[in-house]
Image 1 (spheres, one colour):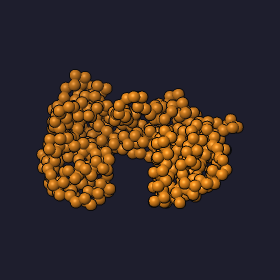
Image 2 (tube, rainbow, N blue to C red):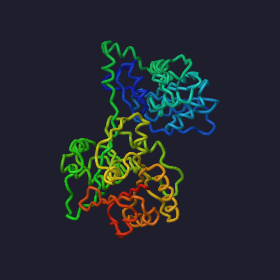
Image 3 (spheres, one colour):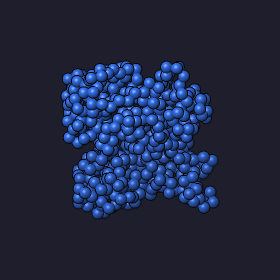
Image 4 (cartoon, helix red, strand yellow):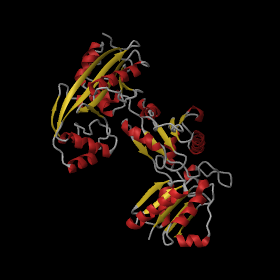
Length: 474
C-alpha cells in the first residue's frame, strides 16, 4: 500500500464547490483542478450513460497532467420521463423544471470515477437516487428560487438546503450522492485503486481535524471586477494622463497590483492601464510576466456564441488558487460589456465574484441628468438602420411616457452626431433629453433640456468622445 504524504496526491477533477465541500469530509489534503471537458450530451445518449461517461472523462482529463495522483471525477444527471434534466442556469428555466417535477419522482444518476496513471486505469460507479417531489404551488416555487437561487444545481433543488422542503422522500444507498459526490462509492473506489483512506489518517497520527483538513485544501481564486477610467486610453489634450487615483480608489489599485492573471476586452489597452497602475502602486511582478488574455469574440458568420468550455478555460487559474482580474476598456466590467458571460461562468463554477467601486458613465449620466432616477432602463445600442431605429425610438418613448421611466442608451463615439440627430427628429418636442459627453474628462459636458430646446440651439457632439443619451417623455 502506497502512503505518499509529501504533497496532495489526491485530486478532485471538478469545479463544483459542493463536491469540494463533500470531499473535505474525508480529512485528507487534496488539490482541485477544473477539467476541460465538453459536457454536452451525445445524440441518443441515456442520462445514466451520460453521467458515467462524463465522470470518467473528467478524471482522465486531469490524470494526463498528474499521472502519479489519484484523480476523482464525478457527474450528476437528473432524469424525468427518460430525458436528462440539467442545471437550469436561469430563473425562468428553474421555474419550468420545478413545475415539471411537481408531484413526480425524479431519478438522479451520480457517477464517480477514480483514475490513476497514464494508462488510465480506473474504477467507475454510478449511484441512483430516487427523489419524490411534493405537489408544489406556484408561490412555493417562486419563494424557494428567490431565497436559494439553485441555478447551478441539476433539477433546481438543493436537498442540503431549503430544497429539502420541496421533497416528499429520498431513496438512496449513498446519502451524499444527491449533493453531487457519493462518498461511500468514492472511498471504495479509492481503496480498490490502492488509496487506503484510514491508513493514511492513522499515519498522520489519527488526529487530523476537519479544520486542519480544510486548511490543507488549496482554496479557489476569486474573480475581481476592476473599474477602468472613462478616457478609453486616449490621453487628454495636454498629452499627460492624470493619476489613476483621481478616478479610482487607492485600495482598488493596490488590489490590481497583486493580480497576475487578467481577462480583458483589449490586451493593448489593458497593459497600458496596468502601466498606469504601476506608476501609482508598483506591480507585484513585472508587467511582461503577467497573463493578459482577451475575452473571446464569436467568429464572423459562425453559428452560436462562445461555448461554456472556453469560458471555463479562461477561469482555470482560479482552480489553482490564483485570483483573476476582469477589466473592460472603460468603466465597470460586465455592464454593456462581453465580460458578463465570464462572470456568469464564474458563478457556475462556484467562484466568488468581487466587484470593486469605480466610475460608471451610465450611472454618472443618470445622476447628473435630473431625469427620473427611481425608474430607469438601459437599452444599450439602437439599430443602425434608420427606419428600424426610428421605430424603436417610438416604442421606447411610448413606454417612457406610460411608466414615467427614463430610457438611456449609448452609441459608438463616431456615431454620436447621427444618434443625436435621430433623437431630435424622432422624439416629441416636450420630451426631456439629456446628453452626458466625455464624463470625467477635461472636455466633459452635460446638458438636459426639452427636445424643442435642443432643436433651437442646433447642437453638435464630438465624434471621438463617448456619450450617454437619456430621455424621459412628459
